[in-house]
Length: 269
Image 1 (cartoon, rainbow, N blue to C red):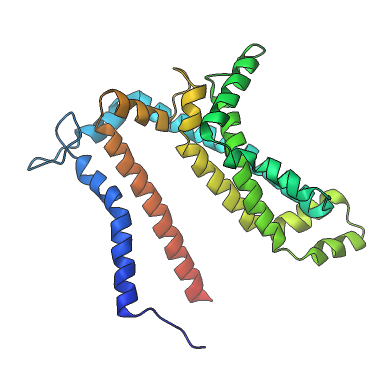
Image 2 (tube, one colour):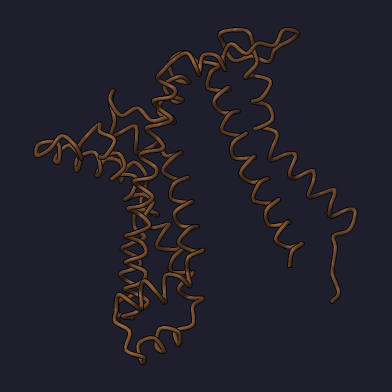
């Protein structure tokens, strides 16, 4: 098999583009080591004081843990709803499938301010009946995030189902398999990669959501993005640069680990 490899010019241009895109992330690293109380690039003295702040102040750990809880719940709800919707469209093939798909994707195309206002009034109304799924609660924020990120799960699961051969489902049906058996033992195992991708993407989207969060939270449900926004808005705390470097390191570690695992699997094959 003939393998085409990029030439020197293409490799150089790709490297320059990658460096250009990574420069904003790289610039945060020296700023996080500044000894001053404001954002600046250190001249001679480098300090870990802002990393120590992340460990000393409990609100940073609380914000991270709250964002993880909200992200996990929102991604589970969004992936479940998106999978159920995509399965229904794929299996039933209704006449107005395009219209239904457009309605499901509406939160994706609606202006964020409009969605935030609608979710704000919705959670305020729920606050009159309960104190759990309500305004300024972590469950209420998770519900709002699930509404915003569910369309992305619908798209990813629908793409995975579009690549699945329908004869697999028809064969299971002809052999007497019930609906639950066909879904959980035939269809879902064949699109498991799409389900995992939908879960991961929706978790990331919930983790970084800030626009809607600003409308539906006040003082109790302070997520990590909201905490960072408050630091930039009030006093430009350099600890924001430190937590940014930590997040960059985690993402880079995950990407490098996945790449190393794929290379290892390729060598075994």
